[in-house]
Structures are given as C-alpha cells and as structure tokens.
Length: 352
Ligand SMILES: [Zn+2]
Image 1 (cartoon, helix red, strand yellow):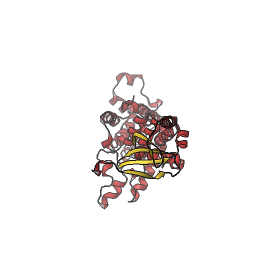
Image 2: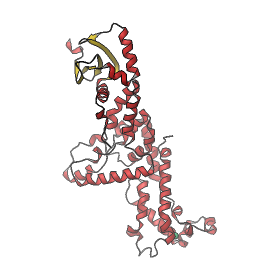
Image 3: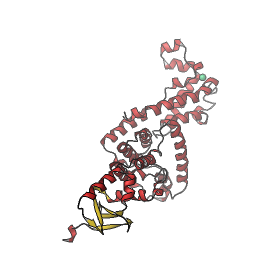
Image 4: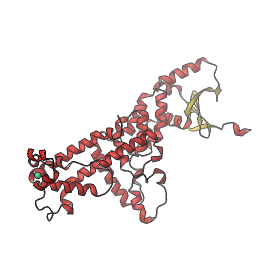
C-alpha cells in the first residue's frame, strides 16, 4: 500500500528553520518541501506576493507549524535551482562556453517566466546568448578562440573539445523557447560543421588509444534533440552552405575586370586565355574548395588569402602569379564575400 504514497523529502539546503512558508513541489522521486522566507520571494516577484496574499485569507494546510503552498506543475529540481539563485546570487555566475548550461537552466527560466522574475530571467537568457556571436567580427574572434582550444584538446588526451565549447542543438532549442533568436544563425552555422556521426550520446564511449586524440578534438552535437522543423532547417541550410563557392570573376581587381568586349562574349574560356589573374583565381578556388569537406565557407574564403602556400599555384605553374592590383584588392573582395555569406545565414537556415 505504501508504494502509492509519494515519498516526502525536506530539501537539504533549502529548508530554513525560521522560514515562514513551505513550498511543496513534485520531484522525480516523490514530493519535495522547501521551507523558505516569504519576504525574499515577495521581494523578487509580484506573482509570489499575490500567491501568499491569497493563501493568507484561506484556512490552508500547515506543515511543521507554517502554511504549505502547493506549486502545481513546477518540477522540484527547477524550483530548488530557482530558490538557490535567490538565496545565493553568487551561484548566478556561470562558466563561459559550458555546453550543458542551456539544458540545465531551461527549467528555471520557465519558472522565472511563470513567476514574473524578469531580471533573473533576463540574466539567465543572457548567459546562453553571450556564448554566441551575432556579428561576423564576433564570429571570427570566437572561432579563433575555439580553434586554439581545439588544438589544445587535440594535443592532450584528457579533455574533450565538446565539453568545453557551446553545443549548438541545446542552444538552438533554448533560443527558440526563450526568444534569444539573435544567436540562431551562428548556432546553426556551427552545427553545419559537425558530422552527423558525432553524436553527444557517444561522447563517453570508449575509443581505442590511437583514436583518442582525434576523438577529443572532434565536436559532437545533440542531434537527437532536433525535431522536424529544425531538421528541415538543417537540411536546407547545409545544402546551401555545401553549394557556396565564390564566383572567381568577382574576386578580380577592377584593373583586371574584363572589358565590354569580353563581357559581351560572356565566354569564360576567352577570358581565361586573356586574363592570367582570372586563371589563377579559378585554380585557387578549385584548390581551396577541393581540400576537405568541412562545410565552412567562411573559413574556406579566408584560406583563399593564403594562395602562396598551395603547390598547385606554384611559380612553375603560374610564373606571374596574381598581378599587383589583384593582390591588393583580394582581401577586400574576400571580406565582401564573407559578409555576404554571414548575412545570408538566416535565409539559408529558414530563420525568417
Ligand atoms: Zn589582376
């Protein structure tokens, strides 16, 4: 018979002897009781104020000498976290780039919404949003940091890269539920670079020693949390990103732009014969895009600036290389192409 009666637990940390109200919430293993101070909750939230006001008038149940307030629909685990933030604001400083953060605080943000704790809610949402860039400049800075982290993870066998960088799927789901949608382009773009085979569930899987370094430096995603609409966004966006390739023509300097006669002919073979720079840039794009499949056109475009390091573009094959004008203008043209890719991410991933 006792099996049907839920186990009642007093919270270990949040049961204060001088508390003047007991909050009762369902936990995964029964019912949890929190003995807390009305003043603190009322101070933070009008919703709690109203709740205690209503409770004062009724002849409500008591526990341990103080009134009991039921918290229907609230998970005790989330309520515990919410209360701990109110009692210990120092716990509100979170580790940057923690990949579990979005999942851990989702429940509390929901409660903060429900009980109108707006400053707390905004602070928590900001903890997730601030891990993601919203401009190309921010993306480049963060990417450089992550690449450095990746090298470090690759070099040693103890830390997995996935444990120390933000995980895009959890962030996407969080952003969509709590409205920080400005992070979605970056989160989907980062997801595009993660292999479907690299699933979060496999992170703790034993790997042979010869594979450990590689496994440590390879990011994983919580693919299984994606539902239909986001999967469609992925399919759409990944396809677009796979197909991004700069039009070589547009990387030429103004000096080397074809004259009207060429343009009228619209014949690339002729242009190639006449413009050494055009032939060079065609080879460059072919080499860079042929390197590895990694669905990262923002990086591939940057790689185009290292044209001198590719053997396919050696002095033997292209004795004159790029002309002075094209050398000078290429960084500007590449920057323009990159801004274009960044600006179109919401379109690629159907975010608008
Ligand atoms: Zn040129």
